[in-house]
Amino acid sequence: MILRNILFLVFLLIALPLCSQVNDSFSDGNFTSEPVWNGTSELFKINNKKQLQSAGVGSESSFLSTPITLNLDDAQTSWSFYIKLSFNPSDQNYARSYLLSDKQNLFEPLDGYFLQIGNANDQISLYRSDKGIPTLLIEGEKARMSGTLNAFQVKVIRSVDGTWTLSVKRVEDLEYTTEGTVADNTYRNGAWFGFSCTYTQSRRSSFYMDDILVDQGEDGPDDPDIPDDPDIPDDPDDPIIPDVPDANEDSLVTNYGKIVFNELMVNPSGVSGLPEVEYIELYNRSTASVSLRGWSFFYGEKGFAVPASVIPPKGYWVLTKESNRSFLTDSDWPIAYCTSFPALLNTGKLLYLLDNTGELIQCLEYSDKWYRSAKKKAGGYSLECIDPDNLGNQSCNWIASMASSGGTPGKVNSVAAVLVDTITPHITKATLLLDDQLELSFSKPMCYSSLVNGHNYAVDSSNYQIIELYPNYPQQTTTAVKLNIPLSSEIETRITIDSLRDLSGLLVPRTYLVATKDTVIVTEEIQKETNVSREMLWLEQNYLLPSSPDQDGHITLFYSFPCEGWKVKLTIYNLQGLKISSIETGSLPELEGCFVWNGKTNTGNEVVPGIYLFHAECIHPSGEVRTYKIPVIVGS
Image 1 (cartoon, rainbow, N blue to C red):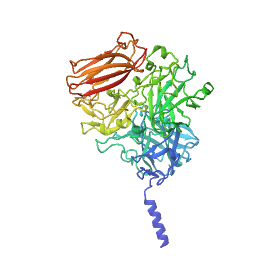
Image 2 (cartoon, rainbow, N blue to C red):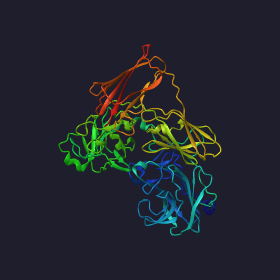
Image 3 (cartoon, rainbow, N blue to C red):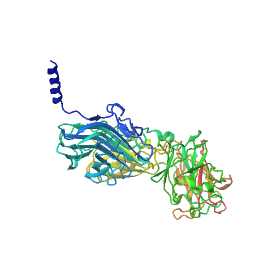
Image 4 (cartoon, one colour):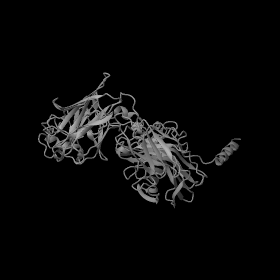
């Protein structure tokens, strides 16, 4: 009886198909059980889509591996998984999938096979690893991952005779494309499968893995047991939202601008009243002290650690390099000395600030045009922010320091004034990147959570779905809009874009895109104002450069009134409160028009460079009075 039961069990085991070695869709919300993944687990997370996602903290490499027991001579073996890299990969930003490894630590010199997913040529390729030394077996198609939205299903099949086949497809494609085949029998056994991610700080959370299946069985190359594409939405009105740079889409609304760049000394040569050192000044706009422990700032693509320090509320902090310490021993500046600090370019560069969680706090791309003075541009003067509460922070919010010393590190800026951001953002251009992908360009930096909110975009065709929205990071001045299928050459597709906001909360007017495979037309809805509560006076440019060939030597103040009868009294003051010039009108003959100031006093003398205030009082016979105070800049 016992023998019969044993024989029955043996025959049953023989009859059962070989089972999956790894099968994980992360639907249980973890990677710590069934199966267990080990490695640099603190650098990964399960996101709200139940995908495995990188969660790095800086420029580094991370990995996870899980045990398998494979003898490739036993049966045909297949590996399949979903992977997304939400950026254009490079030699510094790429992923690897280790199909077979003799070591659990994927960073040790190991024997086995791996897929390289991304490189300078944007390929997906198969390699053999001999004690950590890679040998190329199948070179994937170049430019396979050339876009900023790279979501693929990948499968590898190894037949019993040692033939390897690599196939890939984008999630929206119907068929796989074979990248190549190769015969290799160097390694037949392995104990680990896993992924590694190598990235710079700005890409630390931009890797996604899902639906992993490692199997030994009878499925052939044309009939793989591949799970359904995880990233194609069922509802066209609910497009997929990318999880980068942060899974919390509202984070920028609450934290962006908490600390701002307030002053930049990029060319101290010839400075008269300060030590001749480069520095970056931070300002705490909030009402609470802010710890900078673990913070970093980026200059271009390179990151620099901010020394652990605390900025008091409404306080300042000056960053400079450690080697400047000897020049600043007698300084009363609040200084943080950085062991590594960039050489600041006089002409300008991208500068952005990240907190200890990697969240973007502010981004700025300064330019030497911001000096508005040829003399000060040549050196010895800092660039100062006029209004640190103006989160739009465009060029009009910066100017060369008016201080005789050349700058005001650690103090209120010499050009400080209230400069409320009233400049309406617009979609300036729409570009066809691919047959199924558009890029929108904006006149101002936009709020990230607004750009990736799928409800702000509506497609008029049931055939089309928006499956990706991906802003450029960290500038947030463009966003890619990816469709599920290519646009048609014959049929126009209309996309309505509404409720997009910039960093100051100002709305982009409702805009319509009419796109085909060949062209895209941008049309902005004309705003019909019927409410007198709208702004009746505004500047499109708040500075005057008397010597600039790009300007006619004047500042234009535009007006638009909802009804007849309005009078305006416009007075121009300097920062000391002295009246410089004035204009007074009777009832205006037109509802729309402008006032022009040529930068001169009432006596015809040119004013000195500095900050001035337009004080406008608008009066209607009904008794309504509207008052405006608008700062303007006169350069040299």
